[in-house]
Image (cartoon, rainbow over all chains, first blue to last red; front, top):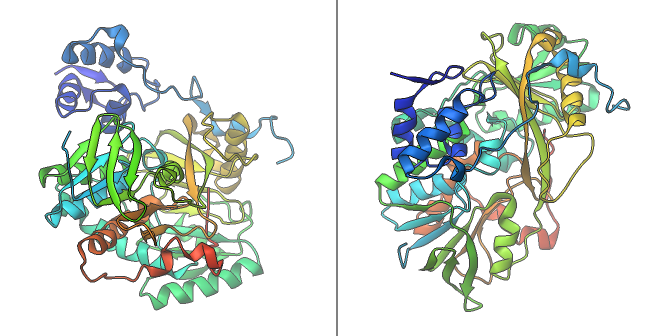
Length: 90
Length: 382
């Protein structure tokens, strides 16, 4: 068993099974496996999943469309954001 | 691609997939056309809430019946949907709120819902992390059978069950035109071919207005950009979804432990713009930490946007359009499409197959906007 996503406990077998079930884009794998939804923001699992997806679908890694990226780039505490200044009138 | 079908559903969100399941269970040959992947629009981006506490009787009745279906859905569809009934706590901030809450609760109870009004000192019995003073609450309403489920899992559960019963689901396929003879639906032209059909269901969410235009029908729906965020996972600290109509905030701790919530962004944006904003995130962070100060230590992981497909009365448009036989609307959910989907799908399947409807939906037709005689839903958040 090879762990692909440490945050959400997803294995290579899970990814291959999902691809065989027809989920052949990174966005779909994220939706059905929660791949990349953990604290590392997909830094570990997405490059690995991209390679598995390329291998299983017979595509080049460069042909795999990246999943939609979401801010923030790193996790930020709610308390810090609450002290922000960008909408003072609120 | 198949050449003909009894029904073509435009949109692979939870409503489209649930309807595909209900129809294929009745032996109807159905095809779903989805431009992206399943649950790619509002379904997969929403707050996941399931609430029965509405001000409009139509919404409350649809939600109450939907919860009955949700409670048995894992068994019925044979897959996990992540249902968790931790209740909804709705803050009451002043006398005006209290009057509306009393009116709502009376109507909701008349429909058989277990819902009650809490005093301010009872709020922490339900959600211990709330700062009752900070949130300016003089009371709250609480319904223990409200909750949330996983919208993506629910959609895939419906879609997989539908496909087992013979439904065809075409992902990454775009609807290009709806062919009519001016009186009846004839076919749907897609990027992968044309399907002849007498019935088209418009379940395209925020894009429903564009789909209707292809058939020459004008919808009053407007897409509103909405924003939402999620935190890291933590051990369970509260069970209920907390919402406020005055502040527009909603937040809950999901099945896996993450806190998910939204609030109307400081700037209202209509149209199809999708960029998440820092002003939203700061406004959300300020409000959620005012409601529950302990959350200030929790990290935000992601923020994203989605659309509410909003009608003038915040009630969905359901049923056949007058003057175009076979053109069925299933849109305009105004931010509550996921929680209503099980019952909406069942009713539309009954309508399409000519069965007796288990709830009347005539008041939810498109024609209600011509007369402009409607009472708008007041209990909207996000």
